[in-house]
Length: 403
Image (cartoon, rainbow, N blue to C red; front, top):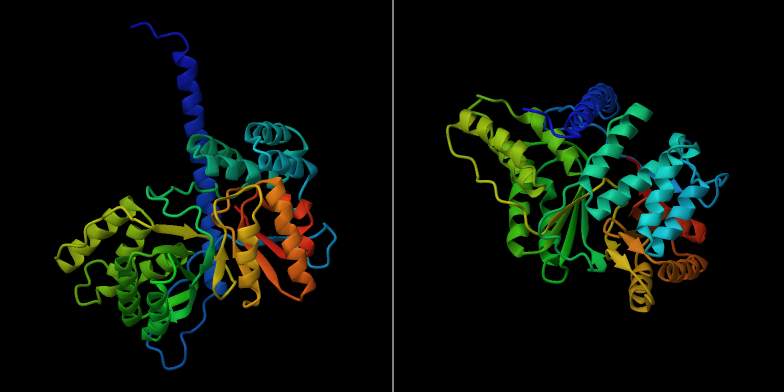
């Protein structure tokens, strides 16, 4: 049969894309192996004195956050902080004004020239495709990024079908778990349960977890199930760190071992909507204990977030902020007067327009003058450069997550 016009070139293009993807994956595998080895060396702490917790290899270090300093030469800038090029500021302004297509064209054009060696324009494009739901474009840029910088390719974050309350704004009760998980975490879980009636969103941070006992696994499993039954939305910070701690605790075929680490891992894989990993682990569970594992159900009212070193309850910003944000700023002001530092959670903030960003910068300036310490965490790379350009970094600490 005669090939249709354009079929051969398309097949060649797909073959080339597949080849590039395999190169990127191979590069990523090598880098991940090195990072895992380094992380194991850094976090190979012994369990607390008197603990029976086994030492487990630490999970690979989570994606680090970097601070957008007031200026490139600011004393607070940490070594290795990426510079914010002019093209990034221009694209951020366009995006804030609702001109996302113009911002995309500007960023893509920059990758042909000087912007190709600067990571921020790449990150802005990746975030633009992520918030727009353009997975194919994201993966295409991610492959190019991995090859160009010889690093792991950025990972697409699938959205949960429910996308519960994107416009919710307010204080989010947060509990950070660290060290070796044991029965001592029960009061933290109880506090979150006590908050379910007053807060629609609760956050659990796992970035500091370095090990777990079977009793700790059982305690956390019961807590997570109780929180799900209560109906509050859960935000899981650095869930992959805990997954990495649990996997070495599983021994396939060891029937006498505790089932708690297995069941907690299955719960986490379900909450993070990783159906394939869940089914593979469930099969191993079935073989090991000769009993049926829990059934996979698509998660409802659950979101994931990057790791954060910030402790205490946060104030979550909504997905979009436009026009006059007087009511939002009043709520932020009330929260900031009772928290130190006051952490504004920007993990859901997709876009803030220029007028609202200017008003927010003004409120941050007032709080700074009153001696308040403010942090904006998990900014995307479209919003961060805008706030920095408007001077917000002079009054608050701005943190974005590196890919």
